[in-house]
Image (cartoon, rainbow, N blue to C red; front, side):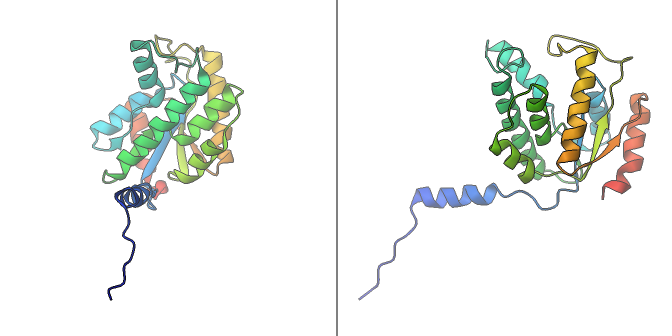
Length: 207
């Protein structure tokens, strides 16, 4: 008599595949975060690095704000900062998954720890699942941080913070990344081409 064994359901098979896909890459040294306060030249630097052929992510904050304004949504830092943080977390994790499919170094315009830093900046609690995300989605242990640079700082439709808030954001993010075990490498306040050369020349230390 043939022994009957229970076969996994379609749901179980799909769940198993999803679990395998959720595993985080082990070779995270090629994932380099560029963080810092608003208006410090991060995105301009990343655009220059992209022209050199490096992969990059797109900053969560500005994209979310543009989309939420377009649909009259509430996930905006001046309406519902907690919901805004939730959207940023989802965005950053998705950016990480996209980067897993790319080859070579990928530069991130902020990373998952920025979400924890933002919550602290807004004096909101950092939920356990955000802490778990920071521990799970790891990057190169050296993080590039752009210091406050008043000469280039500008407010616009998405960037409503003033320079004092930009400085405070920098300070909170610096302490947050350090607390999570990252070493900070400060970018020089120099024109973008010089910043780009600094990054390219420094990448030997990011191995």
